[in-house]
Amino acid sequence: MRRNRLALLATALLALLAVLAPPAAADAPECGTDGRMKRFECGPTAAATEVYGWVWANEPAHLTGEWYSPSARYQFSSVTGGPTNWVRHEGVGTYTVYIDGAPGTGVAHASAYGWNVRARCKVTTTSSSGAGRYVVVRCYSFDGALVDSMFTASYTSVRGRDYRYGYRSAVNGVVTEHNSSTGAVNYAHTAVGSYLVSFKNLGGASGGTVQVTATGQTNVWCKTAGWYPDAIFYNVRVMCFTPAGSPADSEFGVTFVDKGNIVGDKNPSLGLESGYAWVMATRTAPDPWAFPASPAWAVTGSAGVYVVDPAVVVDGGSFQVTAYDTSANSCVIGGWGAAVVVQCYDVGGVLAESFFDVAYVGKRV
Image: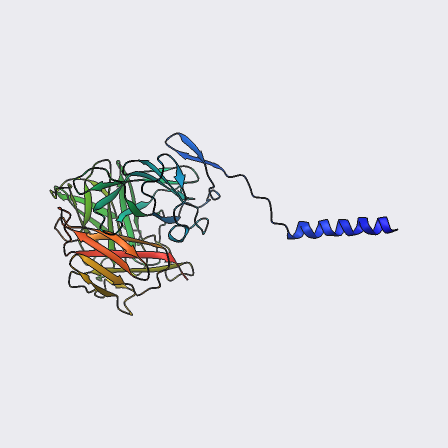
């Protein structure tokens, strides 16, 4: 009788442990790029192709050829809802970013990051792994040489229609376009290094923001020279330059958004905090080119240095910046906490006054 009671007790205990114990972890899938396989954890393959993600690549001199998981607070995959993206240092100034669960074509942006960092970063190629997206980023010094640098990068294939939103990406001859109105995306090469991208049926009212990132294999970089509506189109001017500041032709990715975020997710949403501003050299961020417009974005700083206090709660997430005007000045993300610091330089690497567009996206806290 005692033996039977012990057996029953043991059976009950095992059953309880089976309920309380966590499920066994599945084997991590094999992921890789450029034909070289590397075992690291990836999220499940997404059935949908409209996904987005971002990273802060915070280890610029990481061991070459080895994947690392960038800072969890500053990366995100919309498929997994967590920090499941990866970065690999391929060589001097060259990095592969893996955005988990993002196989579809879309648009990528990259910005150099770091205090007093004189670098410009661009997207050279993008490709699908089947379970995710590889975005190759290269960073160049102001004299045009490849240089290791921290950077921020975002990628989206979302075809958002919740607000005025559009993008055009050309990477090695492959063009991807989206217009939230379902209208055309027109493209014109207006002069050496000058372009006009127009989103049909998004015109009418001023406002919104623009991000521009050069693409391709050269050290040419790009910025916005303005954006404005007419009765039908919203028009974005893009200019591209050599490291020395001469106009030069280049492919690029451009995103226009009004009262939303650069990854095209619904806003306001339960998942994302979103904001942007067009910051003038006078250290103002005027409405309607700032979102949210209230409370007002506060801007302080010194020559070539801008401390921008957004009208949103910043907790991790990602910033992108694009210089604005027709000069060859460029800007970098100097760092961020509750506010973001932007530093702008002339072609010689001297701090210089500049207009710019800065955009934030992050998980809502």
